[in-house]
Image (cartoon, rainbow, N blue to C red; front, side, top):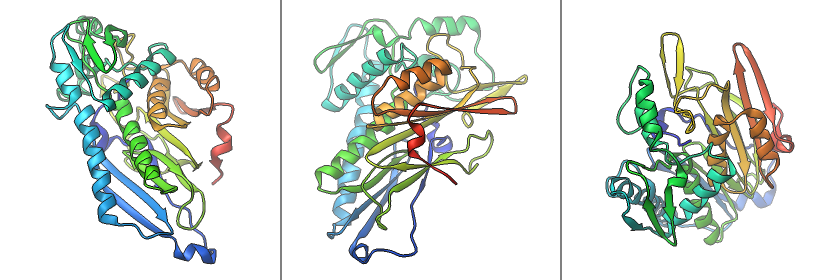
Length: 347
């Protein structure tokens, strides 16, 4: 399930925290922290580099902005000349040659779709738009069943034909929305850029999705937080602190982007199988993995899946863990994969 681009008001994912220490090792005094912030993908980014060697902040800012601009030119739904927008506007049967970035993302999309048995589906855009969470504006009433049935005919990642750096529509009206992994891919690519620049200590955050390696400026592990999933609060505090070392983490939730009608709540997490917002009581799903692209996509899929199936999936994957929060009325239930607690830090 793709996330919509109302990211500026729905960063349900994570809050950045930096560890502190009263007594610092003498050698850390020579370590400098470089902070870079800005806007991308309809949201904000914050990047921290820690290095004992002097860095050119202006050069790194330029490199970061250039790479993010390249990714937006590939995956943005809001740039009319992006690769994704050009594909969405292309007629059925026309084969488009895609860039290395787009092709790499498509391969990961295909893997996610198969891995989650269709719970993650990058073609769900017609449904997201129909429910008022996409590019065609908001709505405050549910669509009619006939409209949903029509939209479902244009859903299915397996209705795309992916070749060697080429992509073809096989069904009229099928479109892509890769918002549920775009931020994760951006995080991974910036982290790769940093590593290739010889920097081992960094924390990259885009719209709440993160990847961290090495240590912060105090030579402590990077500490990040999972937001407390409280509906109606922009800042509801932290539910859990996590240690992040050579890992990525992403969170998906339904407690900020929704509308209510006649006592019913309709969230932006739409099932690609039923065409309706999911009603499985899951309000938040966080995934830790080796790449943020995978974590981002899986977090969305876990919001759609039955919780028992979701846990079974994550427990079957190497180097991947999850935390799922359910809210049944006033009762909150927290479910963890077998190795998730190893990353937790007690309050």
